[in-house]
Length: 315
Image 1: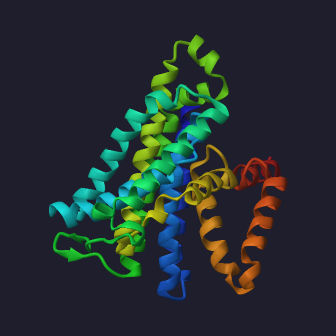
Image 2: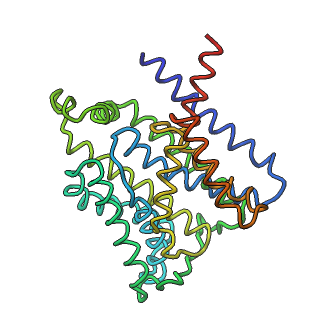
Image 3: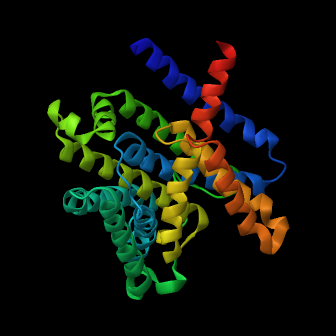
């Protein structure tokens, strides 16, 4: 069993790395590398939700609030306190984790719809703070983000940010896969199936749910910091309710509980709207229709369904 888990883990990482290496050779221009970098960033944020929703079975409709928090940390730190943007990237993730720990303790006592509404309210509060505290955040127009310099080299250009975000996603995927295979990951999956049964087996349900919430927040904040640094700008829209819904949709469409599914779901919702721009005013309608079709015919998600289909053909 352990050997099978290790093989599956390394196969996922190898496949993801192979795709990352192949994309620059297939991309006809820097624009496509830019889109791919955005996919990697949102896939990283979706990985956090995979741990929270796919492993622990807890719903969050305010996850984009942590995405915005990480982005504003990278913007406010250098602008207001003269801190290094790279340091602020990690400080933003730590701040998001601390905030998730504080609010998660009361919120995660709720279940089902009540938990979803509570996390939604939390995300709305963060978005309103980013929107109204103009002295700190620049208000509705947002604020510029200082350019990132690493070892004297300024990170600029689509190709550079492509590899930075790809590396961050690969590390995030490696950590998520290790969490899945760890005792904590097995405990999270146990409470996903039944919190009562997990508690009966001696698992501290409240502690494990809180750990998943904190880890998911750290992933989202780090992704938000990368997005802000790459764009050179952060606005309250990063923490909007629609972005939270998009993150949830990425996890569900790709495959709930699948690391590779989070990447596929992110690619689906980032790349497809770009391809549908030729339809102009019908773009959103066609996108919604395609999402409905995928959910009807692939209810388990793209990656689990394809994996099952391949296994059936090979057996």
